[in-house]
Length: 82
View 1 (cartoon, rainbow, N blue to C red):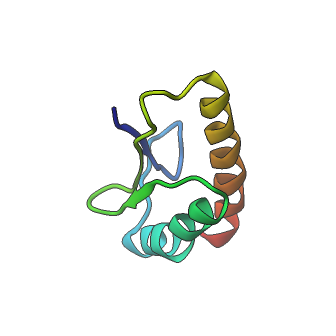
View 2 (cartoon, rainbow, N blue to C red):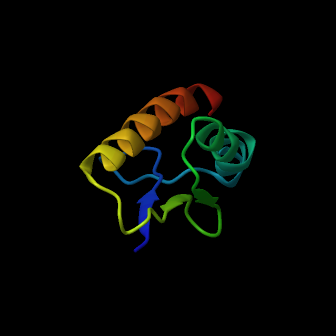
View 3 (cartoon, helix red, strand yellow):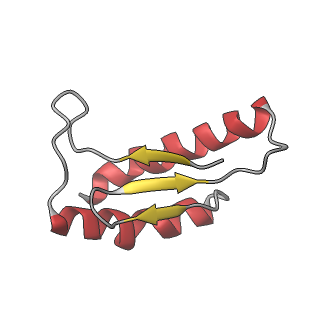
């Protein structure tokens, strides 16, 4: 299974990031920050920015909870890089 988290600038309006913002966010920060935090995933910048996750099929709720905690922490920090 694959999960994708589409990154938008404004959740309400679905406003997307500019090309420069996407570049700074995905390549300049997110990929390495998520990896360093222990979440092995792919930040895809083809089109709108997306974080792609592919957890093992044997994941249980505690694994998903840990992924959520890592994502929340790193994405919160990411806003300072935009």
